[in-house]
Amino acid sequence: MSKPWRIAGIDFEHFHMGDNLRMAFEHPKVDVVGICDVSIEKMAWSIENFNIPVEKVFSDFRECVESTQPDIVLLCPATGRHAEAVEEIAHFGCHIIMEKPFASTLAEADRMLAALSTEQCLAINWPLAWHPSHITAKRLIDGGQIGDVLEVHYYDGNRGPLWHVADKEKTTAEEVAAGKPDSWFYKPALGGGSLLDYLGYGTTLGTWFHDGKSPTDVTAMTYVPKGLEVDEHSVTIARYDHGLSKFETRWGTFSDSWSNQPQPKCGFVIVGTEGTISNYDYESKVRVQSHEQPEGFEINVDVIEAPFQNPIQYVIHCLENGLPIEGPLSPEISRIGQQIVDTAFQSAKEGRNLPLIT
View (cartoon, rainbow, N blue to C red):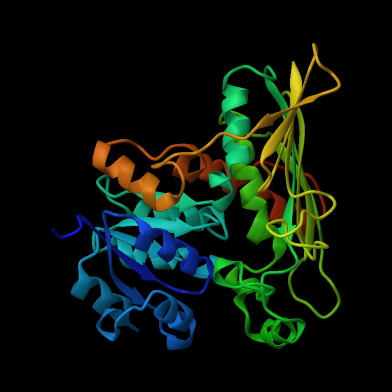
């Protein structure tokens, strides 16, 4: 029997395409019908690792979509090309899974939404959204474990975007140094920098933890090392009606959290009216404080079952059951996260506090 969901992967600017294609290949109802990028070199890892035949490899997105007729397109362009990429693909009527972040600006995010018909689905994939620790924290929040959320504290990043490729395979210092001049991660016009790379994780999941609430104003600072054009460190403070939350991004952590948690740890600390939760990336337990147990206690993270383990499973589940995309992957939550990112970027540029950009 033919598999019911046809998926194509287009634009390999972000190395997460390899991760997302692996999820597609592993899904029992998916047929990966094509991959496409103007650079064959960028597709080489996937072609080799997934044994993709030459007839499924394209260099022109129009030819790819017209020839393969995908139901869903995975997009992994440079951040500054998200709007353009969605406008190109939406014309064909496909559903779209866009790899994080939403966009490089709120205006571009709104262009993406405007390009879609009411029948088309757009999901923004935030890999942190699938971490059992963060899913567990949200369940505890929704269950009233810590009362009303007052503060979200976020610190995240990695040693740098060129220190690894798909499936977190490590590169070398020499490869990193050689790659920086040509990498879009280090080009302002293409949405480079740690703020645009990682802040959306914190503000989008933070909005999810805040139950969709928006801040009133934002203050941010960035650090651009000598010789670079983009930041490798940013700190953002968002003021809500109920308090302050802090979001910090870092390229240059001492270690990568998927190998060894750096200090500070990557992840979240959430403060509520009745307790606190610390939920760190990749960890097997979350830590909770309550009025009854102020010394704190640990809870094993939830065991996450399909179809809630990755974006491919989840989007297909929603399409098959006529359900809306919810949580961090939803355009609604991601748009609020993008508002905070936009305001933070402008605040850092102007060196002053700014009201939330709408």
